[in-house]
Length: 257
Image (tube, rainbow, N blue to C red; front, side, top):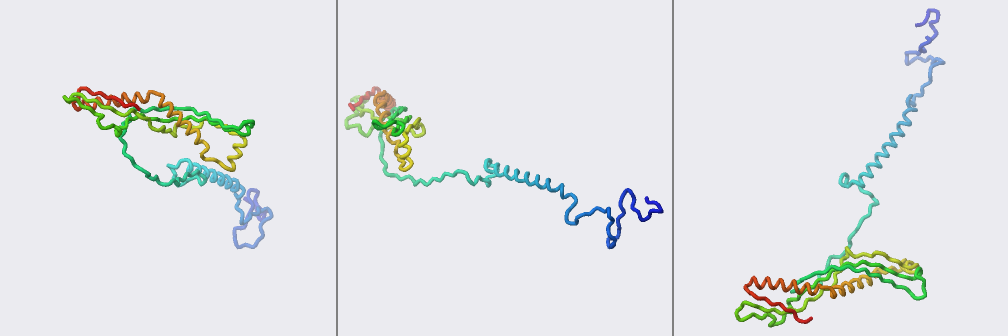
């Protein structure tokens, strides 16, 4: 409230402003100046807006990462730099078909370690040297080829109660290397060998260790009891089959290999 003698003086609590918007009276000297284009809380909105931008960018990065990792949740989000594998292999070509009359009576699984080294005399190993340790796993089958049974190899007794069969000797199949179980354990190459690979890489460089592994597995199969096991299994199979046909005595012999 103002006193009667000071009607033109503002109060101590609040300054007196004109209420008429159309008045042309100048503003009092102590009236605070307010910029019309700048809100009063502009100073507080600046840091808040920056914080919201940072949080939004972090959320966007998180969504992208989750989209690339959790493909089942967002399959449309994918890593643009992800590794892709393209199979341009040609369809298989059937080259031949042959009828087989072999009875596979036994199978042997072998493993061999090939230590192959190639170097030059009077040349240091660190310059020119190749050494490969290869672990080869392969399978060899022992079979009896029934298509090679000669005429007159089956002799039946007069009373029909016994029969004698002469079979060809069991044979060994080629060694079948198991690619999934065969691998290069260690490889050492000289400086000049590595330098040569830069200019002319040989994709068949390890063919020799594969060939040696097959040869050694084949030799090991011949020296094993695989052939004897094939003879016993074939004899047992034929005895059971012919006895079921009414023969009481079955004799199975093998021709000389």
